[in-house]
Amino acid sequence: MRGILLLLLLGAVICSASTILDPFHQDQSTCSFSSSPVCDVIGNEMLYDIQKAEVYLAANTLTATLFFNTSGINTSTMTLESFNDSGISNMMVGDLFFYDPSDPASAPKYGVPLISHGPFKAGDLYKIAGTVTTENARTALGDPGGVIYRPDQIVLMTSSGNPAAVSDGLPVSVSLNGNGTTEALYKVTVSFATDSTFLSTVLKNHLMGIMFASADCGNDYLQGAVDPVPEPQTLLLFAAGVCALAVFRRRRG
Image: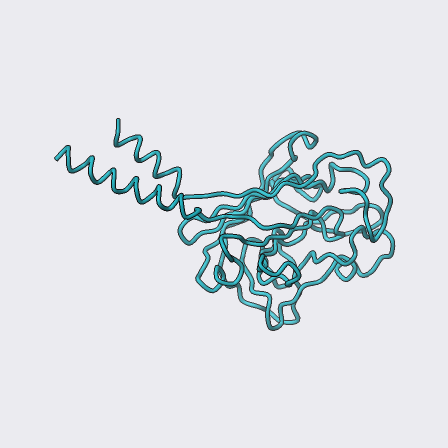
């Protein structure tokens, strides 16, 4: 029994997660289109509202799960796709970006598309450098005027070339989650291998910056720093568990 308890303890501390919450299902009745939005979402929250993001970092694999509402989904295949709203056609879910949290004004350093677009494959990790740059909502949608909520928010990667992925990720996973009012309709998960360059760039003092727009019109936007790795005291607990397990095995022997 002691051995089982210790193994459970070890399993609990090998991985660590952090969550960023976003205002969810707020009253949008007084909202209007503006470059300085006063509400979280314009119009129908069921189409854009973000609830939260969770980030896990275990060994050399990062897994990020985004909880949000969208109409950009094929419910038969449970895959993300383009959608139309408010006179704008072919909108899509934004890319997931990673940035240096020690410099809040810094631009994203890496990105993962949740839906394939241009030369970018859904689920793969790309470094934003060279021919790979970012574009805001205004540019992504061709500047259609006042129908953009946050026109200057970064929403997608773009490239004049055919960039190679830094890391090939797993296929983007989309699943049902909630009713869209108390819990987000869907959860979308990406997972990819990391390396020392990626971690040294976007992980500073145990914090990693992430940003994500639920659509390339910038209607709802989540940004903040997460702590995806074990704290020093957690690592000490892990080490203590290993030592205790070794002692227990020695006594049994």
